[in-house]
Length: 527
Image (cartoon, rainbow, N blue to C red; front, side, top):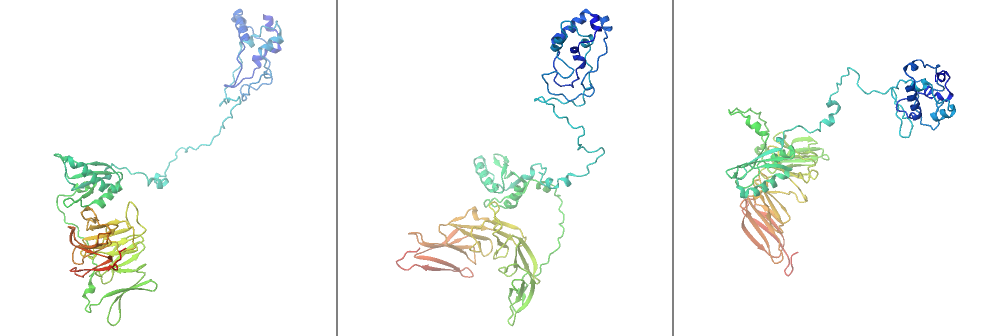
């Protein structure tokens, strides 16, 4: 056995020593079972002493193999062994029966382990090695000591302005006072009425009716989906007259904090500076009792006001581009209205100073109430389904919008006809006469008059009496009716036959009504 150890190793026994080191994870062949069995038998026959003195000749350097320290990337497995490496079956065939014992070094000494590479490449499923990642990668991290001095407002200003604002939820709650106090039997009906009135301002998501002694307390809480809906409800429903005994008072729930902080001690209000508008009816003091009139000339570029003197006109005021279209006087001559693309401006006084402005984009037509307290404006550009803006009624003294209306047809202007004192105004639609009252601008008694076939109506100049006429309908004659308001009492009805058309004319004091009748020839039927 020792002679065998001293003899040089057969050519096919250099497998373990010449085997190139493979990196971790590379595919390797498992050691053959015969070689492992020979190694174990040799160790049993030879003790530790023989192992110590069994150093054979130095191993030759591995042929055609790379140093272990710098392993190459693994290659796909090949059916033939690499250079300098043979399978155990080939080694036994070349060495013959006498070469069966292998050198101790080849059996006992494992191959030197190479240092693992820094970043081994795992083989892919197809057997090829994945490409290694580059060592130097771009870094997008901030350097040490970097201070970000750009605020979110500078970077995302256009986005942050639209972000939802933090709220506690009470901004969308309103409080309605002067609500009827009802029991359980009428509560459901009351809820339906309240919901119908206030749901047109927005979606109501919650409502609360406080009760005491089996009845509601006379005030309720309504919560809208959005705070803007609550603001619209306060603006439009405050002062709403439910019936003769109940007029709503509507406030935002958040306003109660303001009311609670009011001091119990009365404080003298701050004196506001007086805005002198001058004598708005100074022209009535003219000793010659002259009237005034306006003239627009130079292709509409200039507007002048003149005294209508008996000899020749006397110019009072002259301005360039005072109006964009035309001007109109109020019924009593107190105000001069000028038209502009953005709305109407009112002028008055001895120097024709600006009294008030009303913003109504694209306004084309206006009308005054007989008492000069209200102004009606019409624009075809502003009307929407949810927010009627075609016709707007304004308070001249305060400049506030009182109510908006839709306009189906502006061919017949004015749409509204006013009573002599400005307490009522009415409009006629198909088979309906709607009468409104001021200052609430709501329907009289909350409903319109159903009058089939109504053709025309007219207010008395001396009282709150309205006259209207209805044409013939088959065997029913035409009729003219006088109705007293606000009681809606018919004080006179007159039937007319063979009528084609009627015209209603009041005497200036309202003492008489003249009805001009156009009749059909005898023997013919009216159309």
